[in-house]
Amino acid sequence: MDVLNDIKERLEFLKEMGVIELPISMAPQVKAESVASKDAPLSERVRECKKCALSSERINAVPGAGNAGRGIMFVSMMPAEEEDREGRLFSGKGGELLLLIITGALKMTRDDVYVTNVVKCRGKGGRFPSDAEIRECLPYLEEEINTVRPKVIITLGDGAINALLNRSQGVARLRGKFYSYKGIKLTPIYHPMELVEKPSLKRETHEDIKMIISELNP
Ligand code: SF4
Image (cartoon, protein in one colour):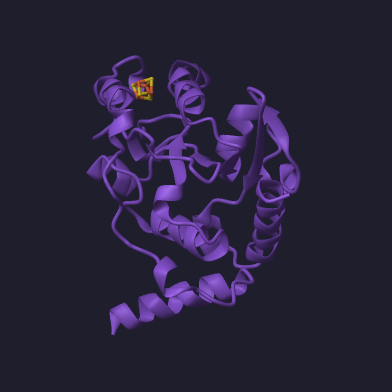
């Protein structure tokens, strides 16, 4: 019964975002795949990194994963609790919901996108990283961007967009348009967990996704 409720909840999540059909081939997969081998050197450096204080608070460093064959890189602020515990992306509820956006709204697969965080380690209790910690970790993200060369970077939630654009307004004020980050188009959407907590944000997210699709398919 829990499984049925879970499926119902996911379908309602997509329906409220304006997604009316979900091809079977794009049905959400709960389990993440392993980090792409081409990212192994960066992955190893991240997993062993002790450049900032977050290294003593994390359980696992979580490097980015995937590829941007379809031109998209998602950037969240930091690993979720489950991702910190398991050392890989897409481990928790937020990851599952992001997967629904990728498959249901963008009509892509998990392998079509690259997913990463501004900082690769989660602090105690999920504390927000300091400016110094963000600065220390940013070179990893920049290396990922240089390697993946996405057409569009999509940030998830207030923390990521504020950190990358050095702003403080958050998604509500900054959404709906493109900015430039290192010469690449960047736009924010709400974090998937925010959509669960505040379903009214799904309509705006649907509009944002449509804008991104138009950018990718002019
Ligand atoms: Fe290294 Fe980044 Fe983790 Fe700090 S947050 S220890 S810089 S990987």
